[in-house]
Amino acid sequence: MRLIKPSYAEMSDEALMRSMRNGDQRAFDEIYKRYSGPLLGYFMRMLWRDREKAEDFVHDLFAKIIRKPDYFDMERSFKTWIYSVANNMCKNEYKKQEVRKGMSNGLDNHFSLSDTNVNVMGEVQDSFFREAFERGMQSLDEKHKEAFALRHMEGLSIKEISEILDINEGTVKSRIFYATKYLAEELKVFNPVINR
Image (cartoon, rainbow, N blue to C red; front, side):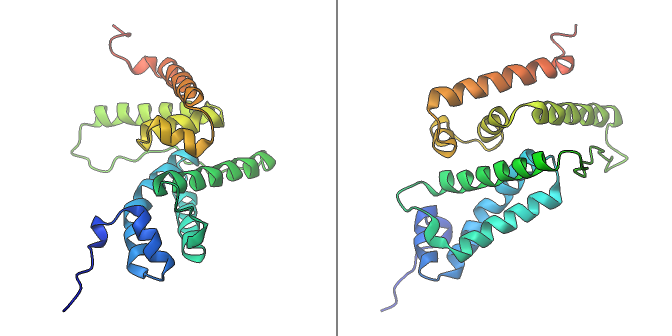
């Protein structure tokens, strides 16, 4: 009689990590498939839209998981844990950048038009909005930026963010509210209702 193994796609993150601890490579592949894209987006937003740096951070994070899968506390939610690790990596990078403040960070804020058949005016407006939004995000202090990004860009709950940042839920809500209010003020020029 053959035992039927559960599909990796149907397994919880935590079950995949248990399998990975037992040397199951396909469990790691599934975790990578689930989280590499969202984490790349998170790192891009948190690290000045630097794709190369974001890709390096994704690689480093998954390399840590491969080397030390037992670092994951099986009592926690994997999603909360992995974003906590990612958030700490960003904080460490901010500290490094603070030390190197006078040096260029390689930012490239230019957006190219990818298709000549698109609505050029709309694309230009989208480009201006993205640039203004990125400037607004970068001018937020780290604690407000991370709370806003985790909530509105990563789609995490207030409770999950509270666990990731190790602060109470009221503080999370306050930081998100402040960041939202600040960004709304910075981007009001793009609001057609206000500009009538």
